[in-house]
Length: 261
Image (cartoon, rainbow, N blue to C red):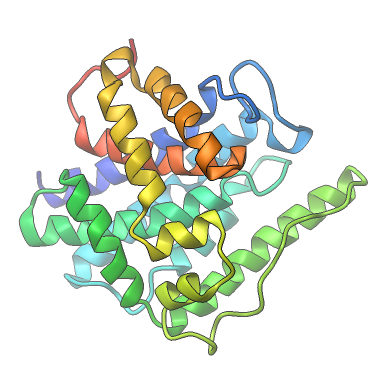
């Protein structure tokens, strides 16, 4: 695969995983059949996924041009979140998805540079640790901005529908930690922090479940993964975020297989 083809595959897969995941039938989440809340309508997920896709292409392009991990990558998360709200109402529907995808795509791109082979999922997930450990204070600055932007989106929508905003925000991370990895490791345990600090255990499990059921189609396989992971994760929205990240890896791995039956 040449560089342009790889970057285009990142763009395609980042959009696909975000817009296809909410189509599945997952009790407690927005699906093709029901919106889980007025702020998480199906069309909000679809529009957000398309809007944010180019940011992930930009991430892969930057890493390839520099031939290594750049001094910052989490400005891409902030950029993607900014772009995601274009032409829509609703809340921060793809906040967790963006947070998980940035290190995965950075790791995958570095794997591509080193090996010209970007489909070894174990290598990609293992590499997320070094990606996160090599982040800088600039990354933490943008991570703070990314989180604050999500908070503002949540607040604005809560005010619009006259509902209390329950989005919990930690203290600023910049200047307090030396990397995104150390911030994730030190923060109070939650699904996203654990995922970043421990090389994506839930995402890997979701990928393995989906791979084992892929002959039924990617949407059906994601429903199986959701049902198996939900009791362990304990949150419907968090489980869906891990499914999105796993679905990105599915599209990266199964490039020619028919996934929509």
